Length: 221
Image (tube, rainbow, N blue to C red):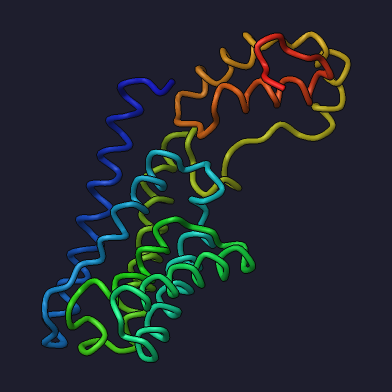
């Protein structure tokens, strides 16, 4: 539903964020005489921050908390079980559970937990410092860049708390009109948002049913 302009803006945002974060990471590695290492999971984070900035999985606590918690688990499991198969599987599984309980679910965090097992020499070179740099600092930089980059665009300001919302008293005044909303109205409204919305057609129909109390003929039982 996003326009060509929106897709281009998302791509430029991802380019700027990764360029800045990887540059900072490279400078740190050179200053510490560490071997070159770039965090691949930040590429997935960039997709969420710039293509779906309003999504719950893209919010600051999800990004920073998800990466840091997962990285901490990844390093800890590696110290106990440095096996590429079992260790990585346990680390990713535990990171998903931890992110759920800490309410910082962020898909790329799973990759941050697995990186110690998939990239040779990372933990030997960084140890627990991997959690804070490049993971922690990189995640914070990604969020900071997303805030600055998205701010000029009112419809996609980041984080979600900066987006303009309709006051509750105005919503209450419109309660009587909600029964007239059609499925076509919802589809049109989503198209006007001009940003990626992670929702399927069936989920949209389910929302329509719950909001209006009417069963849509295209909704499966």
